Amino acid sequence: MAISVSLQCLGLIILAAVLLQTIAVAVSFMYFNKVLSSTMADRFQKEISSAMRNKLTGVLPILGPNPGVPLPKVAAHVTGVASSTETPATEGSRSSRGYLGERVRAWEGERGLSFLQNMELRGGELLVPRAGLYHIYAQTYFRLPSTGETEGEAKGDMGETKEEEGAQLVQYIYKKMSSYTVPILLMKSSRSACWPRGQEPGLFSLHQAGTAFLQPADRLFITVSNASTMEMDGRASYFGAFLVG
Image 1 (spheres, rainbow, N blue to C red):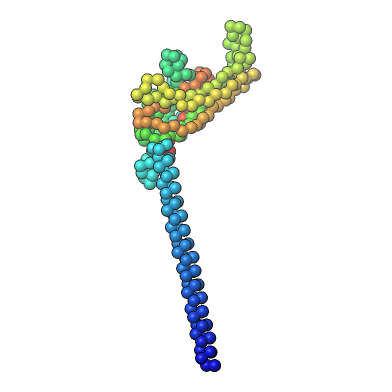
Image 2: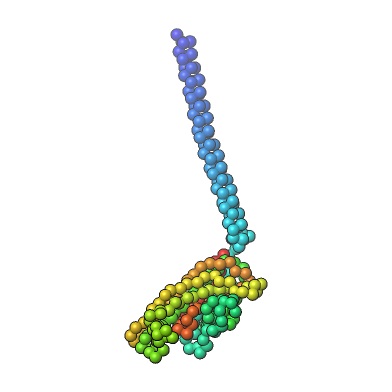
């Protein structure tokens, strides 16, 4: 009888040991599986990030070499000079000068709301100091005289009045490269406006913005249609650019 009881106890002890060993193996398997999954996930994430970075570097080389190094502050905001007697040049058309519209040269770069930070303003053009992706923007403000102001000039050769003809307002942003003689049109914005009736002038503005990759020594400038009606108020007519990548 004593031997039977001892055998039962021994069996229970062996069974308990087997169960404990099984539990230990299961817990160990779950732990190492979790660690392995986490390691693989981190490695996969790094590989994906590296692949995406390489892909972007191929598309935008400027993002590649030193992503952790902050970009230098390169920016400019130039404004119209309301008191200037200088008017935009009326220099021909695309066939003779390589661009459309009339050049706007009367920009202020150092006073009032304007500023230049590591950029230069030369002859109404912004000079780009380094290669990179730039955000470029411009706004021009037009004051169309009313019919009362233009009475006596309203009749055209065909007897049509200015208010019947209307006005097409256009703003262009160009870049000029040292290696290419013809300026390149980056952006344009336009709207149709009717000559105002009565005594009050018609007020209109054009605004546009976009990004472009620029090289050192590239120059940015603005041209407009109807330059004689442009109002060079610094809060209404301005343009600028800043380095974003």
